[in-house]
Structure formats: C-alpha cells, structure tokens
Amino acid sequence: MSPTLRKTLFGLLFSFTLSIGPLLMFPMGIVSRVIEAQTEKALGYKYDVSLEKTTLSGLPAVSLHNLQLLPLGGTQEGPKLPIKLEKARISLGLFSLLRGKPSAEVTLTFPSGEIVSRLIPGDGYRAEVDFFDVDLRDLDIIRQKLGLPVSGAVRGNMTFELDAERRLKGGEINLSIAPLVIGPGALKSAATKSLEGGIPLPATALGTVSFRANIKDSDIVIDALESDGQDIKLASNGKIQVREPFKASSLQLDLRFLIEDDYKERAGLGGLFGMVPVLQRASCGEGWYGLRISGSVARLGPPSPLGANCKQGAKAGAAKDEKPASRPVRAKAGAKDKAAAEPDPAAEPEAK
View 1 (tube, rainbow, N blue to C red):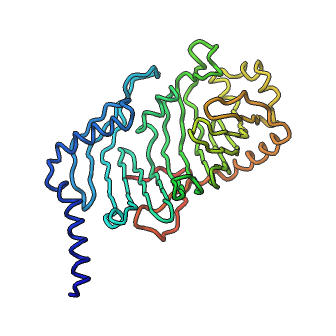
View 2 (tube, rainbow, N blue to C red):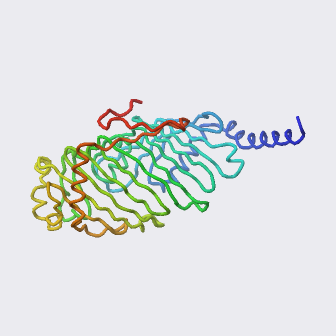
View 3 (cartoon, helix red, strand yellow):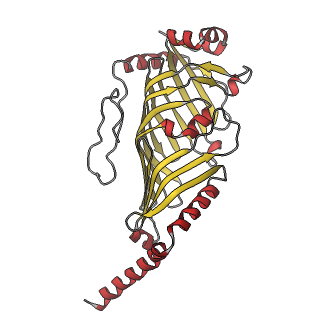
C-alpha cells in the first residue's frame, strides 16, 4: 500500500471514529432525553415530546421509536391528540459530512404510511419529500388548525431546489389526497366570525384532491387544484410569490367550485348562496361558481367574482368529471430509475 493511500485511509478512519465513536459509547437513554429536550426547544416549546427509545440503525444512522408530540396550550376546538410516529430514522452521509456539505435522509413512519425526506448537496441543495399514503388523521395538527376533523391518504412528492445561499430557485409539487373528507363540525374563520359558533358542516366528501405546481425562482405557479368529490368539485389555479417571512408572501387563486344541491340541503347552505352578494355575482352557470382570492398570506382580501374567466373554468371542471385526477406516487428511496406509477384514483391506499 502506497504511503499516500495509507495516510488517506488512516485519515478517513480517524474521522469516522471521531464522529461515530462517542455515539456508540454514549448511553442511548441519555440520547433519547437530549433529543426530547432539543425537539421541544426547536418547536418553540409548543409541544410535549416523548420518546420510548433510541437505537443505532446502521452507520451513521439513528432510529427513534414511538415518538409522540402533544400540542400544549392554545384555544383550538376538540381534544389535543398527539402526533404519533412509530419510527423516525435519521441517516447522514458520512463522506458528505467530511466534505462539509452534509446529505441526509429522514424516514417518518406513521400508523398509516411513511414520509421520506432527502437533502442532497450540489451547487446548492436539493430537498425531496415523498409521501406514501399518510392518513391526515395521523397529523392531528391539521384538525387543530381547521377546527374540523380531516381524513384522506396523502400520496406524491415535492422537490425544492435551493441555491448556495439556501434560497428557493426551483422545484415542483405533485400531491393527491384520496378520499378527502372534512367534518363533521363547525367551520370558523374571519369571514364567519359574525355567526356565533361558526357554520355547521356535515361530513363533506371532496373525493380525490390533486395539487400540481411548478416553482421558478421564488414563484410557485399552481397549475391545478382539482377535486372530483360527490359533494364539492374544484377546478382552480393560481400563483404564490414567496417572500421572507412567509406570511409576507402574496397569493392569487382563481377558485372555481361546484357544490351539489343535495349537499347544500344537508349543510343548510341554500340560504347562504341567496344572501351573499358576491356569491350571487360569482355564478358561472351549470352550478359552478368562480372567485378570485388575492392578497398577502397573512391578510387575504375579500373574494371577488372571476367574471369571464369563470365560465372557462366551469367547462374545464365539467371535463374533469369524465376523467378524475390521477394519484401520483413515487418509487421509494433506492429505486431511482423506476417510472412513477399512477394507480386508479378509486383504488384503496397502499397496504403498509
């Protein structure tokens, strides 16, 4: 073995020992408590974090078992249920650590499915997030924010390209939720604050909801926000101009929707459509309505009728009835060159 190669191997072995040795020797029970404390700190002490145990899972990788995050405080409706992860596996690229541009993979395993995230270094960074049939009921924070129960399996992927300064410069989003059901419960928002207790809603079926968007520089162009539900159908598009902080970002969404007559009766919404002037002016014909929602993410302005664009959206939405939106899915990590499958939207979520 040449002296140069011997020195190189010795340097790598030394770096590996220096990085991994303390972890191998450190009591994993203490590691678990440190992870709990640091996670609570990172989340602004808004969650009580508990972890059953921590184990090594390959090198250099750590698995967290039965991790629970219980929301603290707040005034949200309903009991606060913990976010439960059966397992979280965190893997760091050893050689990327030595180069100073770390790569990482994080796998979150829920009772229903998995979320796999990857951070890949290059000129900047590429971040990938894949969803494998994670039921929204496993993410109770969504119910806490909406004040309504939500269910449906999330499938698809998101990709974000970042420059050397970690600024967003590109990417794409391709997600679906099926079957999405919201409610029953009371819808509360700034628009309904004059109604004591909000607007009561029965269980609302939106069917397969698809969201497709492309990212260019700091603009997220929403190509399609669609649904083929028995109660509500959507055929929408728009744009988000991302700013820092995110609440300063601006949104423009052309929202076209159809609410079935029998659902209006069950939800008691018939009178609402007759009383609200903006909805009376937003009719596109054939049961469709069109509204433009715009403003900063933190403070959206009042919706306005779409006008001529409304009828075009109604025709597009009617065509969607014949061919429901597909449900994108991506091959799991390691299956790099496999083509993405697009199963029948009516199919059951993948068995775990």
